[in-house]
Length: 178
Image (tube, rainbow, N blue to C red; front, side):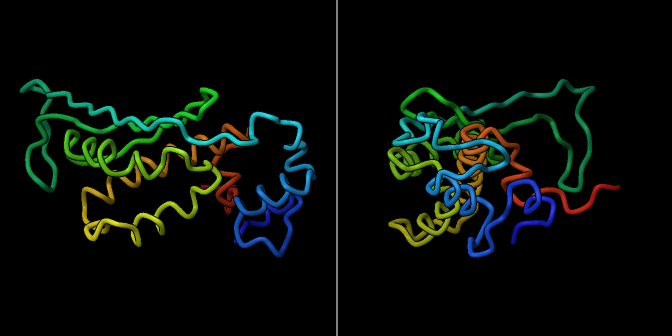
């Protein structure tokens, strides 16, 4: 459920199941969300994902920069950047951890075909579609890593589309003190 802060910021509609559903409902009803009339943003209409790209990153640490962890000595850093782009050129970025080349292969060879053509606002259904989709191994480690990178990139894109920070879309701050 949306936090009280989020509810106050955008005038929460109680029959919407999630903050993102609320944004969609406000957009469809052409009412303001956080002071913005989304129906005036013509770029939101018919804006499918045009491409998904995984960028593997690997950086070996020099011998004197290696450090210890619970899993042994860390001799390098690695990650995968996931880039999703809409048909009008808006880009969302995500990051996935795991073996970079392997995670990149899962994104490029398995997930990209499922995400291209998708409405970015369908991000909340992505995991369900992937887990119940054609891949019997979709709950495995590498698939989870790749899915999380795509998920983060789609959320980044949605935040850019509605010009709101992800923290607001995901429910807002629940505590203002640390």
